[in-house]
Length: 264
Image (cartoon, rainbow, N blue to C red):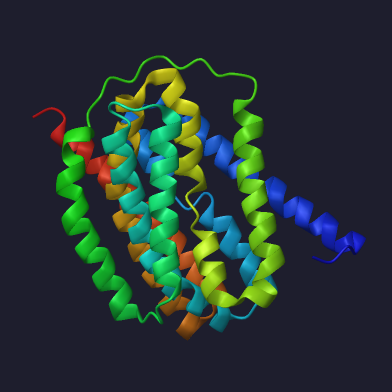
């Protein structure tokens, strides 16, 4: 990492911007219940700023190649959600969250060893959703108790995502697009929710947030496809804009469908 003052100032600004996104979204997720909270949590509030900063430092080809690795990493995040949802019903936050993150890290290691194509990434996501969505269905519904925020909640979330941004920004030059694509999708939001929410509201309610988030991750996988194709053919700005629009549009559609079904 360069110790140039201008670089450190820019890095600090990037960390602060990304942290503010995650903290705001996490607060909304806490106060709106597991369904809306999951839709907010699966917006690109962590990966989005990270990719924007990568696009400022690298060309469109770098972003497109990084997205190829991010696509199967999205599938690893779904397995993280499933592992946590199962374990959180009976185990402590430390057992459930540590095991879930270990599952993600193990799958990420396997993903890194493969040279991914777009078709392979799409197939990996389709197969993962076909396996995990039915298994997550039983964990989607739980009563969300009133949450009392503690003094360390905001600093913890802010420090987690700021560390992620600093790491990706610093190592992307020598680590390459594949490793950057993996790091960009490290499940900061889901991990912070596990650590902060389960001691407060219990495992089943926290698991419900992550279980509902699996449907938002479908839209996220589509957004990564748009990011790859858009960056490859139209440039990084178009790819990032299209990916954001895809994510937001998908989650708004899920919310609208949920409201239509509620009266029935």
